[in-house]
Image (cartoon, rainbow, N blue to C red; front, side):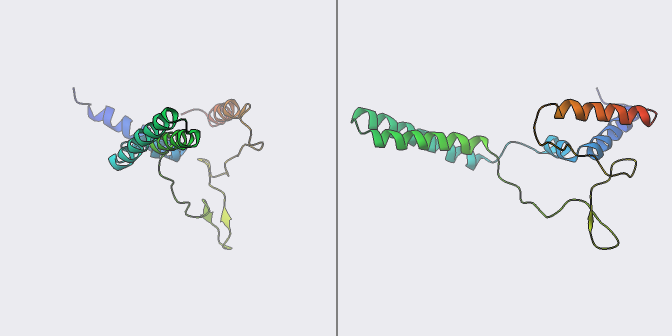
Length: 141
């Protein structure tokens, strides 16, 4: 059943809001697939060859060959699950009039607050509480 025009407009507004609130999440959700087939073929071949070396090493009592096989199997699995690294393109933000890079601006034009500690304890809940307070103070949406 196709969406009505109103539902399509609301969906587009939600997409724009998501993109402006959390661009990394929006980019992750828009990405197609988990990688190309060559990556999976290479990692599968690494796992199979590693398993073969592991079995041959165990059968011939050559532990070094079994260890190499295990490492190769592990590397194949890690290669399959880790995505390709994305290149950092420099600092993120807005270049000010004086040439310095300003931090990214939030919706109300003020700099976004960053978590200080770098630890995970309470970081997620603190961000949720901060967003809740911001929405409450702005009068809701």
